[in-house]
Image (cartoon, rainbow, N blue to C red; front, top):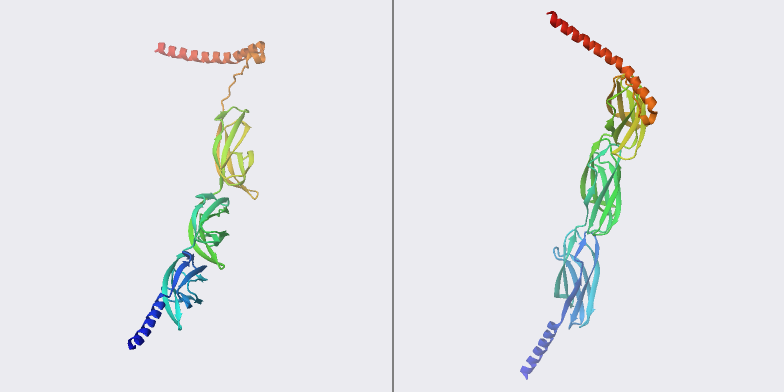
Length: 382
């Protein structure tokens, strides 16, 4: 009897102890993002299962590095049931590892039954430049095109692109884009070239709570070209007879847009011969001026100037000097073809040339004969 009295309570205790050991709270699943951006709020959830336990249970979340409490929930649970806890958290500026523990609460004391670790990687969002186009050189005071392509890496929201003079930090232009992660965006436009070599600082980044976060920057350098209109080719005859009309042409190119002029003057007297004005619409555009002039009775020296017209004022950029020689006088009378003037006039024209040239030839022969006679006499007299 005494043995039974001792063994029965022990058997009850063992039964109760085994029953307690069979009771367990399990973490069956977790739902956390694999990565998040700094300062972004993300949702999470955890599901637990009560195995053989009816009573109070808890689930607790802590920072695995600092042991700081993130969240805690308690329930009254029933055996064989699932329970889901959920919430939101704000991502710190680090890769974040959570320690998730679940268990029973017995007489106010936590009994930890299960532990899981979850790591949320820190995304490093960035808006960075992938390609840009600026000309290597451009004409001062002229507009040039540009474009910059940038990529939104792991970032959705407002982004900016900004252009500044790298020497003075003066703002040239700024644009704001609403971007989605994983996409390219292109900013394009025109700038007007200043009167200097230009170094442009290009910045891209994110806008968070009205604050700019610069992620990338690059430089563009444009060599300044002096604007000018200059002569590249011309044609003038080498010689022209007095009072004859002759053609000429001059080709020039313009590193400039606007009105340009070409002017011809007598280099000796500065008298204006001709002037033309052109409207230049594209940089590098070639234009040709042509005309005719009548030869004076002397060698004719021309001064050709080209340049820009700005606010009604001529700015000379190039100058050439061309000399047209006066051709020797020829008394030969040209005879048109018979078909044009007929046979009688053709005969008359030929006869006229004979009348002009025969005396000249006779005089030449007489002079030559006189010289020969003198040479012969001189030899024999010796």
